Image (cartoon, rainbow, N blue to C red; front, side, top):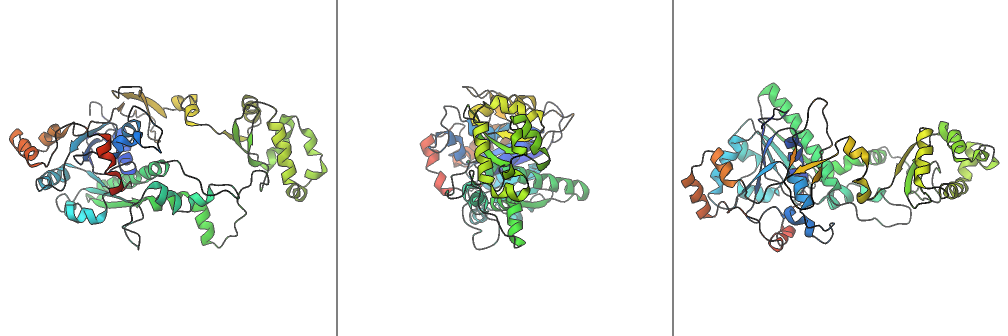
Length: 421
């Protein structure tokens, strides 16, 4: 890299597809790692995720840049006999090898840990699965929607009483899992610094989902008695509820017991402090729907800007419920470098989301556009020691593809056949 950074000189081969595995590689690249994205000749299906009906539609492949910025791309047909020599050289070149190919396919492709670690014993082999490596469902394909959200228990907890499970935000579990996989890789790198030995590290969408739901899952392990599901009009506590301001903005409010009087006074409802219905904890509990109705009326009388000022002045925790179009205009995001410029993407896409890790005194690598399919194939092969004649031979055999991008339709046909870990 042009500038020294934490992972300058670290070499990463990203053989994973979709979001979580590539996301872990992005975090490494943010701090200087050289990441080579290995794609099949038809490309990672996520290149065209922006055209799928369930995703927000855009002309620019925003998801692709988010999950694959700062990388170089090589298009390699792993099923081709000639690909094995390229894999051998990649494994010998790399410090980190990220894989999410289903294990039955890995065995056929000679991509299991035992295969590549034999070539490079210092290699950190990072394995991502949907449901873990063992157990009856180890070979099931996993999406964050199914493994992280549904199977972990999270989806059963993120709804109100009487409501069916809803459709979670696509990619949210993947990106959380990306941070977990990154952590595993960094842990293994630290161990290698101390011992000189490589390692096989792994996580799964299921494990990360259960970790996210761990307070409730741990409660189940303890035989805890769970309260009824949240009901906004009949909450367990009116002081911990969701309300709507006069301008239609919903907000989450958490009033600690020792701040209730201050909030009531700031709301102009000091009468609540002497109301017999709320005079002691037992009465408050018995009249929680009534207190909620009073809060509904009071909060609905003023816009969110008013309540933002009130809550901030009395040091109460609150959160405005915002849509993505509002989130991108939040000054906190630019002030804290959560949204950063993206170089070279073209079109309307000039910014991207930085990874959620900062280190004081260390500037991240400026975000550059994600690569075109096979854009760096010849360059990477040259680095690995292949001469021009060998590269042409690999191309003629079909082991490598010519630079370019397949059509969206070609990629879409691949999606049902692949795992989205």
